[in-house]
Length: 95
Image 1: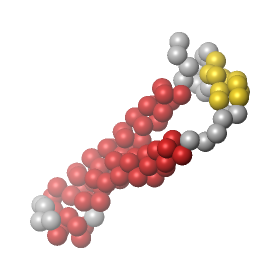
Image 2: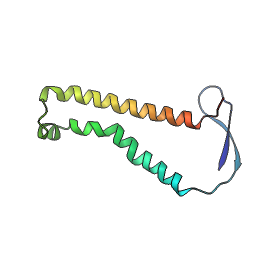
Image 3: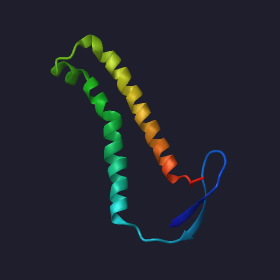
Image 4: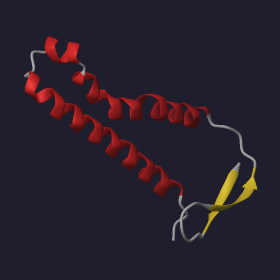
């Protein structure tokens, strides 16, 4: 559906349906690419190095593993948060 976003105060969206539209394969694939590959790899990718077996195999200092895991969790939170902000801005009506 094609929608028109209406001015809205507060959280959420106000919109009106304008007309039905065909799905565009490129847009569908882009959505799957971002939702199933790009964002998860950006968010969880660094934390994979924090697993003990991988950490030891790479020869990193054991004393740095816990701080690295904490930073990886903070990184994942920031990536998810900023991605949600980006999506929210993209979908909001221009003011």
